[in-house]
Length: 302
Image 1 (cartoon, helix red, strand yellow):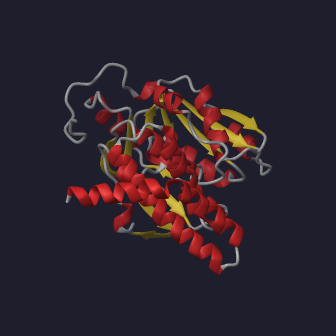
Image 2 (spheres, rainbow, N blue to C red):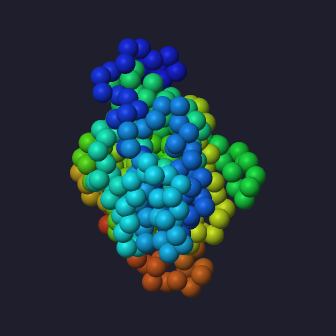
Image 3 (cartoon, rainbow, N blue to C red):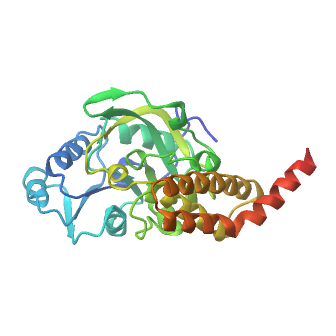
């Protein structure tokens, strides 16, 4: 599939000038300016930078207009991060889209390294990178379960989100093909999208930390919503209904749904949320007989 660290001849059409950067934001004027500074500082400049202000009232759009006149600012009513990203992607002029969350920042050679890698990998339609983690102002080491990979990584996307949106450089045609971010999911929308892409396509991974990902602040979705696995369960159920999985992918998805449903339902019952537990148990019940049959067939093959 090619070596991103030792690329061969460039493939036509892959250049930084073909990239549209899409930055969604809401009520993060200061952080948004930090993120945009990291885009402007790229050693290879993108073709355009789009900021989608999702209904901020803190003067974000005005500050960006003043400090970054080269940025195209789109203001919409508050509809969530998925709607903001999708709006930017729809309005993008470039063949490739680079996503950047407003609380993260890129390292200066991020786009250059990805363009270099994609040029040697004509099979790749999505490229992601490694990252530095900072939590509450201190650098932390990701756990082993957060290790990043390239190639056919669908099974590695099942336990948790295996690709950071801020690391992604992707062909716009691929996002259009799979339908973009699901605007009905209030969280785990990236987990859902990577499942849909990685079930059908291999991805390219550049094993260099090319961005800094900040966490621990109060407005993160992971802090706003308790029991994030309920949204992952929705995504898993949709994948099982999609008809696009091969036998191995389907079995792995069933196994993940079984485990996540059990953990979530057990926790919900302990907190007295019986209705939530029963909803998730009902989702698993739809596929329980298929799981039992798959287990029998696996045992027979041993």
